[in-house]
Image (cartoon, rainbow, N blue to C red; front, side, top):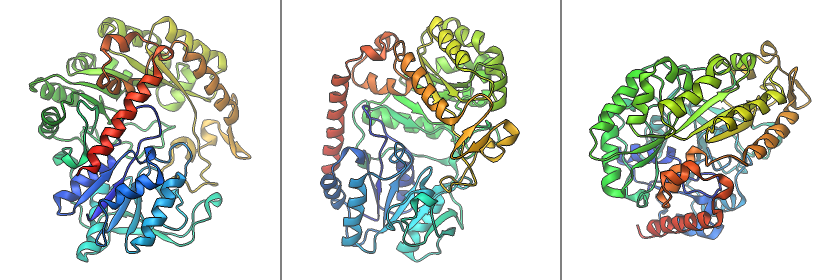
Length: 488
């Protein structure tokens, strides 16, 4: 096997895949490079991970690619069993290149074992990774990159320089022509809820956002609908899959895209359900899209409302939330969508001028209008002068004082909050909300696959789910996946 990918979602109760390595595997296979994704590695012991990797590795294996996006989410460092397994493999196969990819991988330390980082916020990583592998397989030039000579202060265990490759010499990948399909080697389970790429990037630039590919043009980075249709039909025929998590940063960014997606879904010989990140203000601006979304199978909307406070919502770049969300969201959910589509509304704790009482009022509004589930998160701001963790910074990060922030010691401060208070209160208010919270929309597809009905998932509170049974059912799915993998 030329390339092996390690992948994993965060360690949790639900069986769900991150698509990044699978997209890379599909792309390089099209160019004659053999690859295998080993997923859910957080669920394996050191010996299990070593043995299952040994099944696919040999003296000719070129690269072990490690997806870091969710694997290191909780602690910003690699689990010990993964570090130990890398050491064993590197000792046994000294020519093997250890390559990191995914959001934040440029700062992660692996005790000097990392040979390269593949990362770009402006160029498709498909091209960069392909050129990197072909350098060792065919002797072609490496992609363009830069030398990383150190990490941030607290991670100076880094013992040697490594390269971060971020630009392809001869780009080939075009997302419009992305014909991705899941491979039999991916070991998809029956009725599995799968992630779905429709487009990349976001047309907005919210001031708190640290994600890449912001501010794209409206019609950039969208796959052709015929390719998406072929993918959906392939999944239905091979895995009985009808449930999806659409990954677009803003799925409903244009009315044209919603109409095209709806027309494509209407041409399928089966119906689908999907969850997606949506902008409620765009639904309000283009009312027809509310019906297009419902008709095309929307069954789970994530609204990043951020704040219902007039000043705070305007500050982050979502003024509509502070002006109209209180009225328009309940009307959308209960009147236009007939209370048939669950939503998760997300809010930020720590914005200037928005007080604790304002946030309690937000909870009361959510409870009184029966709006399914709610999430509160501490505002994240990075001190750009004191960290090398990130390659992309938000508008808030780059212009602290302009927006009323400053750093004192290691925490951010504004006229209403400091970072420690925001963290404590976000934990407190979320704990309170859990008493009336239903399941977040991202877990709904998984629960449908486990046998729950839509009616149950619209009404059962999180606290009333039989979580031990759910964990056991998902544990069985992990075991089924690893069994299929071992039989390849």
